Image 1 (cartoon, helix red, strand yellow):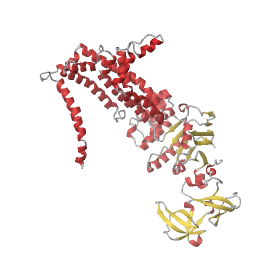
Image 2 (cartoon, chains in turn green, orange):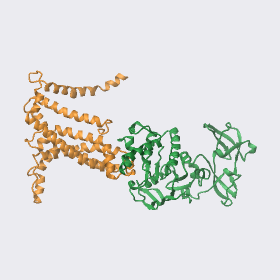
Image 3 (spheres, chains in turn brown, cyan):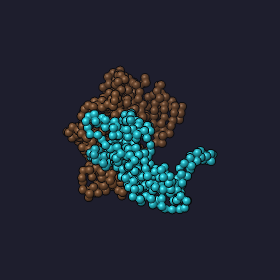
Image 4 (cartoon, chains in turn brown, purple):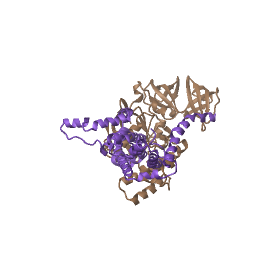
Length: 357
Length: 272
């Protein structure tokens, strides 16, 4: 894999008495699309602001290409930020906004003009040079904010929930735009969001955070298919999280019924949590299922039906393109490799443990 | 229903017609007539007498200087205030507004007592064997009085605009490589222009028309245009000339209002 570009070592930060980041360690590779994902207040934006230089950590260091930049002023850092609310300079034209960083660096007029043209083309807003900021829509303003950042040729682009204020359709379009931009520019993107779908769509690596701790680091597939704990499973998509007992390797007892699975190494007769994604549950004829249950709710969601099935005193969430009417008796069947076993937290505190990579 | 709502505007309409519009029309009427009631432009032309021109010139000069000093004092203060936490700010703002709760005349009279030849300041200076300060009855004392009385009117509109600037806009400038000074010069000051313009108008207009400050701190020798108008009304009982000069002064005020209209389209700066 590519080299480490940024190394975050033991970083802690608190505001007043509120611990936001606790001894956090993370490294970011060159040319990586890394997403910090978590609920509000999990510390993801604070971490991004520490990278941008707008906050100083109480403890720990930030290493950028081998240099300690923990206390370096924002204007001395080789990275640029795209802010949540665009933060464009409303008293300047679009061209002046984009040229801001280049003018400060004292680049020539010809160079600046070329760069403005190039950047506007890159974000699909050619010909907008002399427009005013107020005349642009939210999505256009956000693209100008991105253009303003990338003309400085940063090694890293920090994006703080840049699509948060846009409507769904525009957000989906911009997700593809961002992936395309990243591939064309070949630089590292560090992206902050609370939207799991956004994270899954765009990232090379997702860092799931909660309460100042990293819960899991992995590819979108890893995070979705093999969540390491109940928090990650619950935060990323809908899921059935059920207390269970590991009978022995490759056999787990869920709600009193033995299910075959593929996980090993959890010991014998040990309590565990299992995650089963709603789309991984097959509803079959009652005699073919591992458990039988009764359909209690059906909601049409467009692509699929969302159904709740009461079986062994647990309400199973099921996504299926086939509809079973309410009160019908169905069998529940799960493929062994669709059952994800997780170590059960032994105490409340361990709900947010640091998960080693 | 609609008509009932319109009725609610009645008291305000009555108030503004009787106390704003009618008096204004009367000033225009007096300004354009002589004592017999015949039309004349003589009253307006009175501004061209040497002593009136001198008073107008001095008024413009002193109020412009006071406005400039207010701006130079107020901007850094507003900048510091806008960077504070909210609870700290309200305390400092209170300290600033507190003197405004006292009567304007009393405050100016207090300065008279402080600055007098044998006043408090000179007694203290004398105690330390320092030369006495002799600025009472000079234009300097008038400027001091204007700056002291009108400074809050400069601080508040600028502060109001500065606190509304998104902190991330400032962060964005730093992020793009600007130093603190470049950020101030290229981003913060341009974005606060509506507040600056509003503050300038709110200091310049009352400074231009004041006669109390020049009366109390300038002695009777220094006449500003406000004093001349006051004398025409009170001592000479010549309402026609007084109105004529008032009308001329109003032109200067309308010019500054036009300036606000041009720069402060959203009315941001005046919103307090």
